[in-house]
Image (cartoon, rainbow, N blue to C red; front, side):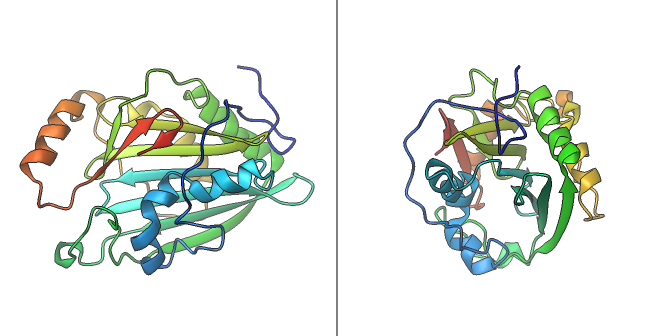
Length: 237
């Protein structure tokens, strides 16, 4: 796939889509447990990034989220160009459990009182391109047939969103649908991040839970606090 312009360094384009309301804004601090409790779905769908992107204020920004069984670990990678597009901030946040079994989790406020570890690393243009190239190799910007795929909180999945030319591209990789162990971009990200904790390993492809099995388990354990997001075009609903 030919690289389209992303902050002068290249990534992906997509047709215009409607923007959802923004519970999460550019000024929200996702490392704050109270903010994350009230705005996680909005953050996961990148409502803030979509709004900034359509206004021309987020060119080249990328958000990548790894859900490694939500109540055990969620890891977030944010890439943002600096002036001149020769250097980029790579912000990594790791959210782990904080007595989640004692939290009364509501479907519209699922994150509870997690804490978080954070690092900010300055990377170069070549490193940024290594991330975008790896994403593209893993299908970002070219995925098809994703409509209706469910991302279950008690399983493993990746979400990536990038802004280019005023539009946001969404990519998703779900255990049981995709072979998460075969993805290349996670290793690129972790090698660039100063967070030393290893990524939790997803299930092998032949051991992964299917979408139908996940749906049945969610229905049977309706009181567990498990939730999901569904891919709908370029959105997560």
